[in-house]
Each structure stands twice: as C-alpha cells, then as structure tokens.
Length: 394
Ligand code: FEO
Image (cartoon, rainbow, N blue to C red; front, side, top):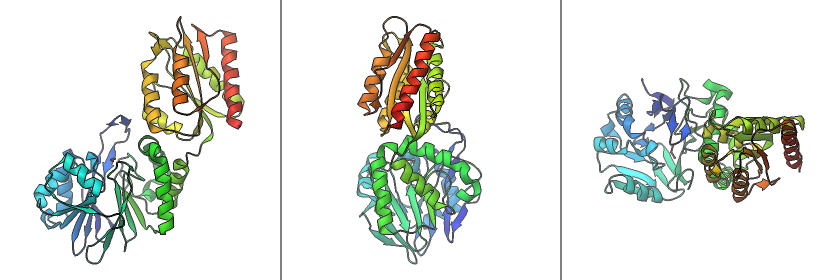
C-alpha cells in the first residue's frame, strides 16, 4: 500500500494493526494503527515509528517515497514501544549516528529501552529545529501519556504531531476525520477514558496552554487512528469536556452475578433510576470488557457497583474492575454498592470502601439481600435506585 501524502511533502508511513484485539488490557475491537510521519524537506525527518513487528512494513513504506538511508533525522515523541519499537531496525538501516530528537526524559527512557549510544539530541520545551523550508517546534507534554511525551509542531504547515493525544484505537480504510465522520468519536472517547483520564488535570492545563499560545492547526496527527483535518474543534472540544470530567444525567449499574440474584438487583436498581428520569444502564462484567465499561464511566454521574460475596471476598471480575477504575481516577462521581449474599456478605462493604477510597460520594451504606430477592427485595432495589437518582440532583 502506497503511503498517503497527508500534506505537501508529508507522508504517513505508518501501519495498520488490523487484528490486534487486546492492547495491554484494552479491547481493540477494530484494531489500531501506528502512525509515523515522513517530512520531505531540505532535511528529511521521520516523526515516530511503529511497533517492533511492523518495522519492515514501515521501512517498505518509507522506501516508496525515499531511500530510508536519506533520512537525516528522527523525532521520537514518546518512548512507549508501540511508537519506538521500530527504532532499532530504523536506526540500523539509516545509520546509528543519525540524530534522534526527543525530550530529555525521552533520551533517558529510550536509553533504558534500546541502544544507549545512539546520537540522542534532547530538545528543550519550545525548542525549534529547522528542516530548511520548514521548522519543527517541540512542546513537552509530560504524562500524556508517559513522562517522556512531547508534541512536535510543524510551524509553517500548522500541523501538530500529537503522539497519543487525540488518538483512537481504530484501523479502517479511512485516513481522515471527514472520511469517517462521527463514527470515530466513540473510539476517541474510549481512548481518552482508558488511556488519559487519570491525566485529566494535565490535559486540561495543556489545552489551556495551547489556547494561550494561539497555536493554529490545519491538522492534528495523532499516532493512532485517523487524522483530524476538517472538524478539529470537535476533538478539541471533546478533550475539554473529558478533561474537565463533565458528566451527564447518567448512571451505570456495573455488576457480576453467580445465580442471577445480583443481576435481578441490578435491573431493579436501573428501573428505579430510570423511573426518576436518569439514563441508566446495567453492565454485566462478564459480558462487557472492562475498557468498554470504563468508556461509559467517563461521562456517568453515578457508578453503582454490585457483587455477590464469594469466599468472603468480592467476585474476581468486580475486584478487577474496581482496581482498573481506581487507577484511572474518575472524579465528580456518586457511588453506591449492592449485592446478593449467602451467609457472610462482605462484598458490599468492600465495594463501598473502595468507592470511598476513590473519593466517590457514596450515597448509601449499601444494599444487601440474602440469597434470592423476593418482591419486597426488588422493591427495595427500586427504592435504592430512586435514592441514587435523588442524590444525583444535588
Ligand atoms: Fe500509543 Fe503511550 O503509546
């Protein structure tokens, strides 16, 4: 496949990973892409690489435009190996002495991943590098997504190479946002919810800094998914909403169940919430992947979690999800716990404690029902839903 010229003399020489379905625990139902960009100027620059196993494919893509040996310099915006794994093959091919521009932390981290004696050229925040007719400008973006992350901005073309930010795990025939339209937004939302949510404060600060700098964009080119060129404000506005952790009148009732009792409780809680005008959905942890559930958590005001008690503990899937959600640090949430139990019934208390640790506003000590809920028990669940709905109004 011939690389696409995304702007005059600038090519996407990255690859599509059509078949990946698990990206370090994140379900990638439609694969992903590793974008890498070749800038043809008086000096030829390559911005980012791809996962190790796609190195040769990237080199073949480059070779369709120019002999890889003619690349004068490489920019590494981020050390994570989905973008740096191709560096060893690339550097071997183009010459180990070619300059490799990265952040100061990038140099440190790349040395720990790969060859320590490459010609590392750490750049300053706001540092610039002339390619001849064009200028690269570097902007440190620590923790978006690693301490080494940075953006590279092509000043004359007003193109931002944004690394992980604004990306989506999506592989399709489309290259640009206008070719896929709104269908890309759920992928962008899932990416934010599962990769960047815990760095929301930093993301918001960065968005404000970019606004202050009055940077203009003709295109934003992340390292995953489609490139934004038509409706850039759509993804920028979404990032502002997500990084402010704006939530909707929405509740998720997340649960696992052994003999359908906790499931019956979940569905009755949803009924109580819905009757009170809340958009509420039950999510079974064994039917939905944790990363898909987390995507729904992103804009949910209430997160209600249910578990049976198994051997005096939380059900393992519930434990897994709570650990995952805790790491991603959702804020401004109401929480509550529920569950069916047989004799000891510790799970509800354990969930409540976890939600409190996450600084959720826990609106009830939790609802427990022994064995199978009867009509009275299910009515109590509906009341529980109504109580949560009431707290959501505050
Ligand atoms: Fe796509 Fe943080 O790597």
